[in-house]
Image (cartoon, rainbow, N blue to C red; front, side, top):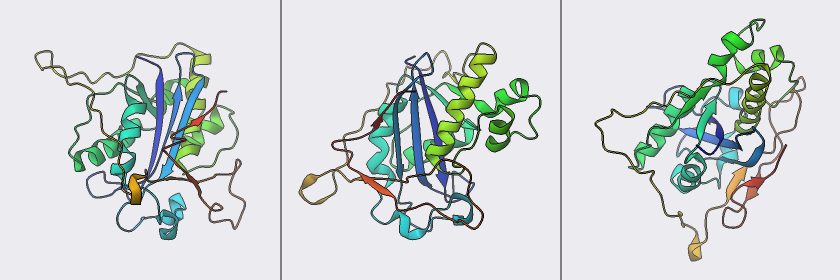
Length: 237
């Protein structure tokens, strides 16, 4: 394995079968839990965006955002050979698995590591197992909750906190049966749907650090990012 892919999705509802991804973020960590790359974009769900009061994504915010098929190749590249991490990671995995199934691409088994599950033994003083409660119990400060990148970075910080308090457990590898043929990791060609064959730009929400001030109901304008030249944001911490 080549490190970790900390993932968070915001969706139009709670059911991976009935609802769609409306924002996705990935924070890539190396084996030493240092950030290698980050990726985030709003996603046009092809319909209503769902609970704006939760994720603070308005219908107008996804105008011009890519469809899932258009970001699917980038996500596959980011997940390949990584342990997928998230807070209630099985939920994020289920949404991605269904989105890939809708475009006819089976997502191979991927190792999973859940920061919420680990909290039950690593954060005994937590008042709950939600991400906000766990971040508070770990003393990690504020973060922009219910934004895909904010939640992904918070989960990455939790993973580092757990590593400081003891060795991380092995991931749930979810291996196929031993008699099953190996499934090669799928590779998708880049989606080119703009005039002239240019890639569809990503649309990244710029989330301020800190809690929501009273009365504030949303972020500022989303920032477009062109995947043909800047598919991810390089960074290290």
